[in-house]
Structure formats: C-alpha cells, structure tokens
Image (cartoon, rainbow, N blue to C red; front, side, top):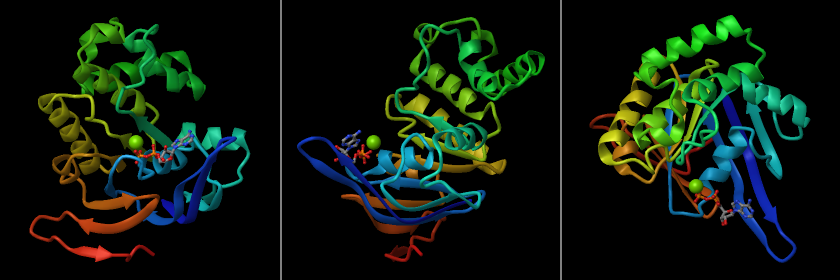
Amino acid sequence: MIKIKKLSKIFRTEEVETKALSEISLTINEGDFVSIMGPSGSGKSTLLNIIGLLDSASSGSYELLGQEMVGLKEKLKSKARKENIGFIFQNFNLIDELSVYDNIELPLIYNNVPSADRKKKVDEIAKILGISHRLKHYPQQLSGGQQQRVAVARALINDPKIILADEPTGNLDSKNGNEVMELLTDLHASGATILMVTHSDYDASFSQKTILMKDGVILSEKMNHRNVDVLVNNSIN
Ligand SMILES: Nc1ncnc2c1ncn2[C@@H]1O[C@H](COP(=O)(O)OP(=O)(O)O)[C@@H](O)[C@H]1O
Ligand SMILES: [Mg+2]
C-alpha cells in the first residue's frame, strides 16, 4: 500500500538547513497497524505529513497504491489525499466556527458527494462513534475526548485507505486516550490500515509493529505480538 525508499526531507530557511529525514525506507501493507516512536525532533511528524501528502519529500521515492507521489503535481496530490488519507491530529484540528456536523461533513463536500448522501453518511458515522447527540454543538462545547471522536469521524467519513494519527491521545487524559486507542483497535480489526505516532509505550502496544526513529532515521522495528518480542535491527527493506 505504501512503499517508501530512501526518502529524505530537508527544511531550508535562510540561515539553517535541517535534515528532518535521512533516506528512510519503509513498507506498509494493507491491514497493517504500525506505530512510530522516538524522541521529539526525530522526524516522526515530518514522515507522517509526507505520507499524508500534507508535505513533500526532498528526494527519494514514496509510492502510494502503486503511484509515485514524489514530484507529483499539487492538484493530483491533493486528489490522492482526499481519496485515500484520513488524518487524526494531537490537537484535533477541528474548525471552531463550524458545528460538529459541518466539521464531519467537510471532507465529503471536498469530494463532491451529493448533499443527500452527505447527511446519510454523517448520521451513520456519528452513530458509530456515539456523538449523534452532539452534532449541533461546536467543538469548544465538547470535552477533549468528544472532540477527538469528532476528528476520528471526520477522518473516516470518506472511507480512507489509510488512517494516519499523529499522537492522537497526546492531549487526552488516560480514560479518553484509552477510548481512542480502543476505537483505533476496532477499526484495525475491521480491516483499516493505520499508522500512528505516539510517545506512549502503552498506546504502541495496541499496534502490531513499532518503528523507532531518531535523528531522521529508523533505528529499529519491533513486533508487538503477544509473547513475541522480536527486535529486528535495520531489517527494513
Ligand atoms: N516546517 C519546518 N521548518 C523547519 N524545520 C522543521 C519544520 N518542521 C519540522 N522541522 C524540523 O525537523 C525536525 C523533525 O521535526 P518533526 O518531524 O516535527 O519531529 P517529531 O514529530 O519527531 O517531534 C526537527 O528538527 C524540526 O525542528
Ligand atoms: Mg511530532
């Protein structure tokens, strides 16, 4: 589903040059649930943003569903993003001026879904996530846990091929964080492909595989299967 080879990202400002990613190689298959850990500044968000087509690589290759994304025109990239990617952020990234309903509906409008279908879909996903009674509320009227549920609903509304989550429990207390992790685990069980950045060993334990990053490179890859704790150093591709 995702094939990354020797992907690098350099941020350049007038004075400094930061190599956020150094020749990263990584493969994500359909149905995988992979977590990424590592100290702050490791390049985790940069990698997720590139995979989510919110940012572009400086060099290397990123194939999404068999199509090369590096060097792709912005318009086509944006199309690929809308059709394939669901993004969940640490700070929820909801639009405060829009109701819960309108926040969840937005990706459907971007994808030109007719309005009758939009309402059906929003009602459906809201029911699944237990936020039907909050659709007329505004984000600021909700708890953090409820806001993240809305953000998850928004991420799922277009049936994305892959769900990207950047520290999805980072701003939640442990109870609400747990609920989000259970939600992701359920989604994975029903076939979703998930890539999640986290600082929490506990959250990472929900995933099948944990990738450890530092200073823009992948240090190791560890399977999380129960009773199987294998460390496979530098075995990625
Ligand atoms: N937009 C940007 N402009 C310049 N430097 C950036 C930008 N985004 C990230 N960086 C730098 O790239 C490195 C990796 O950042 P990031 O991917 O956010 O790390 P992490 O998510 O692992 O904490 C850091 O040194 C950070 O300062
Ligand atoms: Mg980050």
